[in-house]
Length: 226
Image (tube, rainbow, N blue to C red; front, side, top):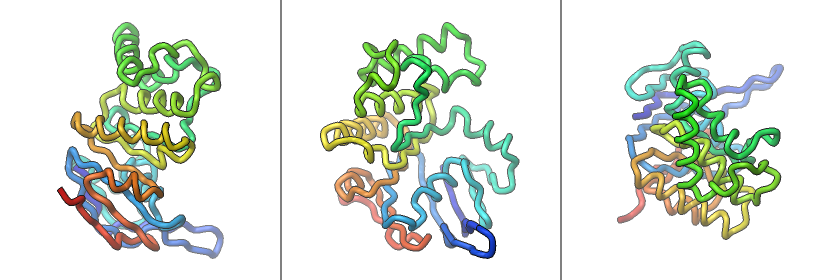
């Protein structure tokens, strides 16, 4: 499904060059649940951004669902990303001026889906995530756990093939964090490929595969024992 070959990412600031990713080779199959771990600054979030077509490698090739997208324009990457990839972030990234329902519906605004169908899909997703009763509330009126549930609903409402999560429990207490992890396991069990960046060894252990990064390289690629 996803394949990186010799992918490097170098950030340049003036005369300073920083290697975020260093010749990464990686294959992720459809339906996998992959955790990316490692110390701060090791390249975890950069790798997730490359996988999500939010950032482009400095060198190397990236095949997304069989297509080599290296060198594609931003508009082509946006079109490919739309509806195929869902994103969950540590900071929720909900829009305060919009209701819960409107935040989730926003993910469908540019799909060409008729308004009536959008509303049916959003209502069903909010119900599935257990926040239908909060549909008319603003994000600030919700707990952190509820906000993350809304963010997950927004990420899933278009039916993406892959869900990318960057520290999805980072702003949550233990109970709400565990709740989000249960949701991610359920989402994966239903067939969605999940790739998650986490600092938590306990949360990483719940994935079926763990990648450990150090200095922009994958130093461990391990499957969870059955």
